Length: 457
Image (tube, rainbow, N blue to C red; front, side, top):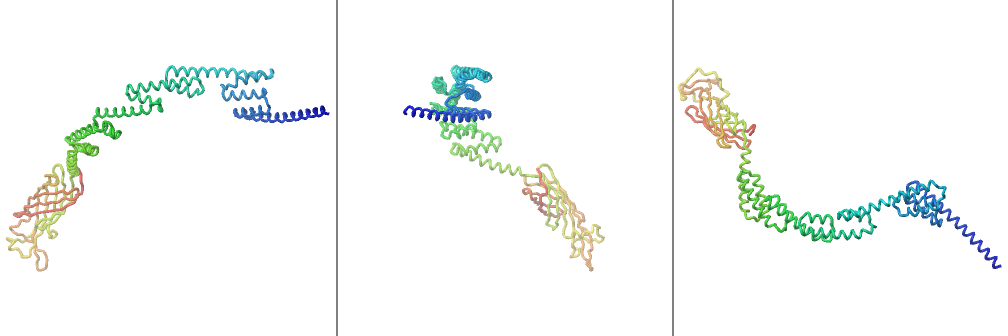
């Protein structure tokens, strides 16, 4: 009875094992199918992941799985270290008739060995180059490219040695390029703080040297802006003061007022407590005065004008002329009294001996015309002189209210006269006139006011 029960139990266990194995085989095939699909899409890592799951379900591997894994790993990285062992496994288990895949794996093995050999040689060459040249870039490039190399410890020690040499070279020479070289190759190095401090000192000494050499406003101001609390501020300010004051005076003496003003103003701005500040302020005041005078001179113009004129014998008229800054100009004046429109310009037949014998209510009508020259005395005053002619007629009213013209023996109808006086030009707008005419035995004063119609230099 006991023997029968044991037999039944054995067969039940065998049945359960076969059922489980069959189920695992199905899953393994499914994962392998997924792996094939991923491989067709060039998703090689995904292919390997599915193959690993397939091997887990299967509990082992087979040539199909091994071949697909070799090919995937080869496509991902020809230096993959598992390619050699997987290839040996495939060549041992593959069916001898599977010549095509055997040949493919063999070719991959050969190329794998060549790639690995080249990588080993490249690594050795890179190492030798780094050690031989002692080039920091080459050393760091090796460490970055071959992080797993056992030689990295030696190279790290080598870098420490080189850093010390760069530091000693910089501190001994005290040259800017040596400090910069250290910081370039060891930006976070052991001596960064010390080298940076020494470099800053070297930069300042270099800039101060440029100030002493150039003795220019620009170099001095650049130093002061860069090092407001620098070691050589006092010396630089002394140089700046001498430079600005000397250059300002030179420009001032050569009447280059704009450059002189720029130098003096720079002095006043940057050296408000300078020893020559009072002299500088006096020069600036003088320059402003000169500039105003020069501006006034610059604004001087010649001009044409139209003028209304009058005289003390109650004649009124107009004048056309010009006032010129250079050379002689001309003018023309015409005027008449209130009766000028009554002139008949035909002469008179009747004559009286004198004005006393003329009718008590007689009137005269006259017209004057003069021409002359104008020349500048001192801006804005011009002197004018010329000559003119006065034509006059005498008349009275008869009983019917008509004009009756007559002559007076001691009064000429036509008189020639000289005139002279001054003209004043006000800015670019107005011209004033004042002078005198000598007509007969009488002095007639004349005046006028006009507008400038055109200005030019």
